[in-house]
Image (cartoon, rainbow, N blue to C red):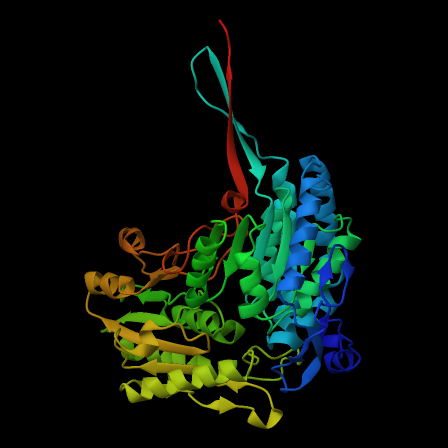
Length: 497
């Protein structure tokens, strides 16, 4: 049990290796540059991480291309790839405590969730795609008797994966699972704010039997290593998860290079709609608080816009505010902590600036709104709930990526739908109603990739994840993710009759 582990002792004994993994081994970068890996828990360095540059991306892409072209992975039967990936998933689970500690130290999430949520979810993702790949059949088109048209999926080639800092392992697994199962080679560029688990995952994959060069990891900064990967002419596709601002650049880089496929999973400003006919407001309030403050609010699908009917708004705000004390920030290495630290000082300042903007535009902070645990040297913010918010305020329109909730009021169903859809994002939404007709009616009207009904965040690898509008394109998770990492080929044979 994690409660019996002294995580501080383990953290003190930890030595990190921040070198890239290229062609199956740890290597030094070409220029030998490094940066400090700062823990948000206390603001101190965990050690040095290599600063990958274009030359290092070149080396990783070259290794991935050789591995793809010689077929050491791509030409293995799906059942053989499955066996290796299942072993990889087992290796992840066996390293649960090590990976959870790295994740918590690196980005500040509570150790209990890193261990109970992030590690198992990453392993399940890899295992699920392993199990899926030898059960997917190609197609035969319904042609006339003088032809046989085969429609087959082929691996894309070299896939560049660029993942964010909020769920480093899970986001990496969402790319790695389908990309590797389909037979691609991968170059992963983790966020410079949370590179440690990605590097360890590459070693575990090698231990599981993944051939050298198939999975490479180059840490570094987005404007250096990330840009070099997205511009690289020998990369066939980019799977990117991150901000909408950088997602635009991914599309630009594709246009400037080889028109590589780009699949963006971007930001969100998800609406949580509570109608007066719902018969358990306390459960709705508990759910939105738990979902909003989980992972310190650093989730693209966080339900940060809470739209409540005007007749129950005051009661609902009071119920949500009553939940906030349970989410006060604590030491992420304490197994009892439920909300940890923001990822770095820059994110702390960003979140505090949004809180100031909320005050400045006339919203009212019912609870929270202040920095916390400043004596620790880390980056913590109280769970914050704003009432009196209009949909035109900055805190209601822009993604904050912190524990800041805005509560808005609506007059009727049409007003609720209009406000919910009045956003540049369309990632997720939630409808709370005891009337099945209303639930279906509103769910159909909402422009979002996932609509939850009378719950939030209930989820599984079997369903797609992604959004409408500026929340991105393509989908992670489920069998639909294979669409991002495979090409369709038609082979038409003429048959003489």
